[in-house]
Image (cartoon, rainbow, N blue to C red; front, side, top):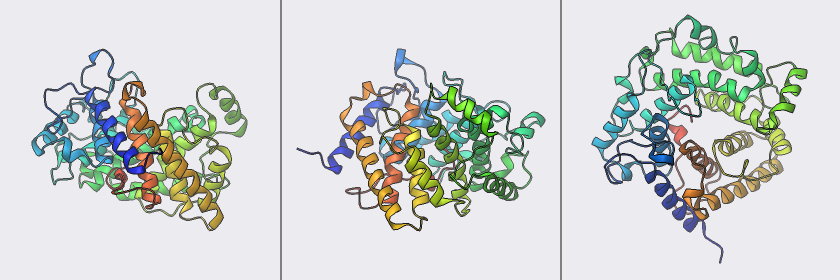
Amino acid sequence: MQETDESLRAKAVENCLRFLAARYRGEAEMGAWDGLFSASARDGGAPDLFGAVDAVYALSTLGMLGDATRPESRLRWADHIRSYQSADGWFRAGDRQRHSPVHASAYALGALALLSDDGADPIGQLQPIDVDEALASGLVQPWAGLPLLDRLHFWRGSHRVGGFAAVVGQLGQAGHADKLPGVDDADEWLDRWARRAVESIDRQSGMWFLAPAPLQAAFAAAYRFRHRPDFGHIGGATHVYWILDKLEVPLPAPRACVQWIMRHAADETVCEGAPYCLDFDRAYLLARNAQHSEEEGEEKSVSTFLRDVRRDVLSYLSLHEPSTWPDSSHKLPGALACVAEIDRYDRSVAEGTPWRDVFEVVWWL
């Protein structure tokens, strides 16, 4: 008997809670969780930054942050996240995945914003973030200062380009742009950033190819042993698109983006075996751009594909034992956000209340 959407989602939620419980290192029961999570279940790892932030995003997407916490435990959770802010104001994870301070900071700020939903202001208690001269050359002017390797591997480079923009935007949205003294006017800076992003896009694909074509081809030939190069382009582009969306900038090349993805990266519903952020990235680009496509048949094919993606991501989360999922909790928020994005795009697919689009609040995932 085929599972209903409602039963698949219920089982997926149950499995997600089990997955998070296996990484909780505190003494509280679920219902008073306080952020003491490890990103890994291996060897009883100690609480860490990404474990704490991943759990906020996952529970928020499922609409269960309120069920999993109390107001006082959310305050302790925010305190725990802030404890990872270094003396210079940047968050550093110190994890085996080597997340950069820019990515870690943008992601931590997003979690603090989600923990602010009940009127608290944990972002206001942060220390200022120091943008020294070395950082300023690559961050305050991010497009101009992007190194060649980050241009070739834009999935990596976009964590700097988009990550710093997310830091600026999240602080500004919270009313705390003063926490970033290296940026004089956050709104003006973001306007300049967006103009450069739109100027730099390849309008034949909706992607960013920032290195000379021969070098890009050589890099792709080597990179395919780690990821499909087309997936890398999607991962990089999404980090720019979601900032443009927050800034309400019209999408630069919606039809080209949809056509490029459907032609190059829609041959499998789950990108790399187990769903994670890349599946969300692809769903996000397709859903946001298809809404502005002028081709009715094109949007219909996107809708059909995204329904298949949603079904297979939910099937993975509901039918696979959580202990067999990828160990890192950092893969879970993207998998859940993929379903939530498709729910947002096509309200008819979810039985009952759709999962939450956290990008209503955050600037980064």
